[in-house]
Length: 539
Image 1 (cartoon, helix red, strand yellow):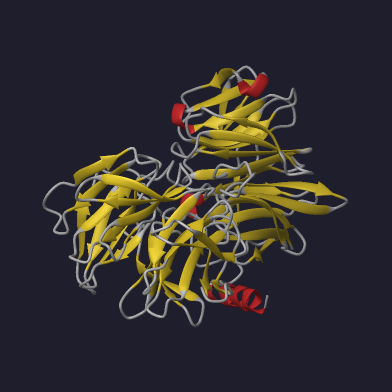
Image 2 (spheres, rainbow, N blue to C red):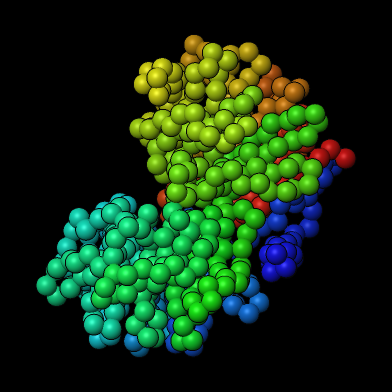
């Protein structure tokens, strides 16, 4: 606990900024930020430096193990790294999962693109002779040899292995790796393109690595376990029980193991002899996107779509409570990026998986999971119980009803980047059109009225008890108030830490900035730049 509190205090200091306030408003940080924007691949160079990669943040970091801090080693967008590997000569290579690019850099030399056009490029490893191998996972299922000079195109070796994820070459020069979708660890002879199962019975194995003695270690993301496997017999021994949502591991020259956890936004050091884990770095939130507020007895609860978890925050104290985390066994959750709450319904949506999930706000159990949407960026429950979805992929608002959302009708199309949604006083709704720079009212008959124009990337939207709209104008890094009857725009707060620059192309490879209003008029917004939650109060 001491390490956790010390880390939180350090993070708060590192990301501290002066309070931004307009004439009548005061902005303060409610939940402190954290270093990463989701942490995935890990790698250790010959000098013992630990590196960590982030996909959503599109950055590659160097982590100071002693102090528990991190600095950007390779910035966005080239720094996107789902996995990191070091060649015998010290060259570092990493994979840009969403961009489909694979890069390398030797020492502090120039960055070289080795491959492109491989969406889902995920894991990679060097052989002792310096040859490089990589796989696509989730958006593909193929093993390649990569030309380390970046001249020849990738050479396909195998495909449809079952999700060959974080892998490593063993002492026998064979490739060992987890089969994510099969619960197995496999050995691959890359020269013969032959795959053999080494160990079975995992829930969701995510990555493997060898120590100096030839022991093979595996992380099971669903069970949160670090397991030692005998590569000859397949016998398994649990080394440490950690939390679910594990992603990758790396082992230093002293055989200390470093494990990344997506939902914790953190890295732990594990002693394999004792199983004791030391938290090196952690965040209270992983990557907060859309938020919503429910209020009871004058107390606000903020519901946070935290990408790798669904969490709530106490509006008075900033205390964070976890309701569900990604990849945990028995948990239904699919990378939530937006959240709305009404009564006892909490609706999470994810453009990445095309899902809308309805959760019971009291028990945190899933009431319904709706699939098949095209980049849903927000969703709200209407008065009649149907759900209205802002579907960016079709530029539409889609009304969903019936069993498991089987009945779907388009309320309106032709919207330019529908991102944020909020219900009105009657049956009208308000939507932010990020690409058009507009905020519009949509009536129940689908008629559209533009309320505000010439805004810079409006995203999150909330409606106060007085009917006025609060909008996160992300491109201008400010919060604004819009009067629906006149369209008058008033700035509430400026110079805000919102608008993370991640993967190229903007939306939908983007986490929306969320805005919500409590019963007493307190405004909350999420900071994707800091992974923090802020509150805005009238003076």
